[in-house]
Length: 239
Image (cartoon, rainbow, N blue to C red):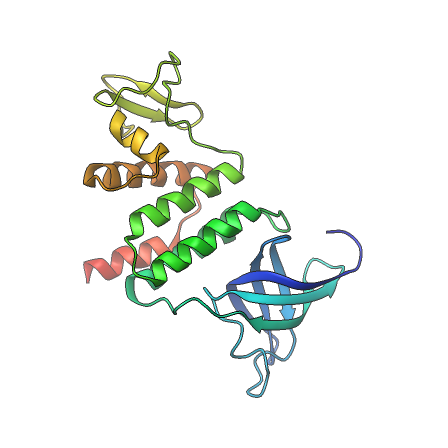
């Protein structure tokens, strides 16, 4: 976005809030048509601010903003409703999705398909759906939108279709390769790869192996940046 512009009635979600001065907030939002945008919410920390109770994470909002600098000024925020509040495990998973967007998505880079996938994942989590399918679908869409789409149906070496009963290792920059000894690279069954291609996570082994694969791929593309939400989740499970 270049030059001074005014944006109105833009669908968005709050990803992160942090204080700015004694009365204001800087709000990182993920919007459908403008991507991830930092906005200054002037006076939002004041007790009587109309925005104070509106700028909630995981809730669909309609925002308006203006400005030409790196941080735009938030002019309007309206709650659109329709999504139950996340609680418990699903709340932590929601923070995981937000952290992925904050750390992997460039600013002001629009991804409508990713925006829709994020909204679908939040709705499914809020309704108590099994988290594995929702997280894997979102992670796949995120990597695809960033230019790192997964190859799941053909052997990257031979070009042959993935065989259900065969074993593969997934090379980050290439895709699945049939190997007997993959060293430290996790092995995946052909069925897991084909299940992921079909977004079918009913098989417990598919759920486990797909989780390991996506963790490996995301860690690689994040360049070693730690995920704090994952660490918190592990620590709570240990307690």
